[in-house]
Length: 211
Image (tube, rainbow, N blue to C red; front, side, top):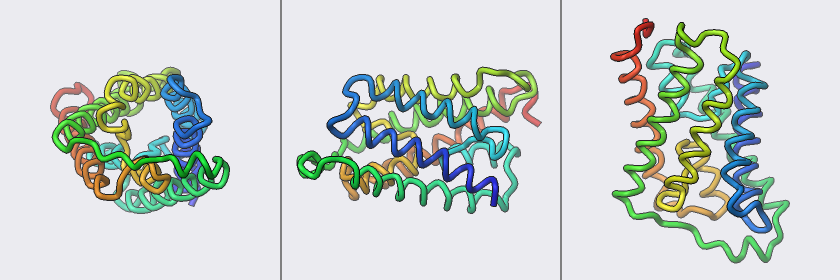
């Protein structure tokens, strides 16, 4: 239970920070910095216990890479998705009702959203695998920042196109908060899981120490 609980804690604070910084009164243009930072610190806090995935697409990529046991995948996913739901409820409790009432659930253009969600989930999982699971970077002290900054860059680069989830748990969280439409959640699920699988495939093909 220790590993799924750590995954729950890290995912909770990631999704909670997204809601609190994106929904007014929030952090405005600084929101991606806060989001990338909380991901980094949660990875530093829990990475040595669970691997610090906090993202079903990362768990999939790490599993396909061979660094996550098959019997851990579903418990990780359950913990991550449950954390997203609890975080969304906490955000809705804390944010002013008048601000929540102003929210309009986003419905991104399907093609562009699929593409950017795939690309930056690929980038995120690629960075995770190379910074946190490769022999060449073993024992480094920067992997949390590398992963957090990947999300920060993605949010600034393509957040206006797709919402910048790069994470099925985040997609669930922002949908429950009212930031994204339920009719669009499949875009994130398909693109994020495909991006994670593609990154694992690329790692195994290209990394010198993929075995």
